[in-house]
Length: 107
Image 1: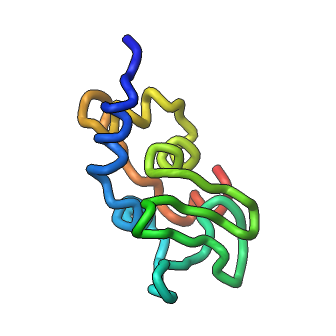
Image 2 (image 1 turned 135 degrees about the vertical axis):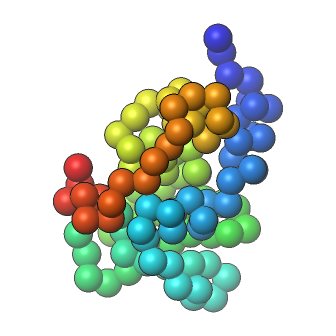
């Protein structure tokens, strides 16, 4: 069954990206209008991962990863769009954050 744009938008709007990112162990600090932290997708010592709470999007200036809450879960969990969508919408397997030590290794 195909997912409608309305359903996708509802899931995106119903999840605060900052909260989801933090649930994966990424420590975010407020910097201006955004939140910054160490990127969960590559090793770094200087924070280059940014979450914009106004747009509910993320971007890493170090590895150029970026997207919305569904994309973040897809990339972090290593799963497909549909599985991430279903997990976030409550219609599938629950999304369980991975330990940050595993995320830092890029697994």
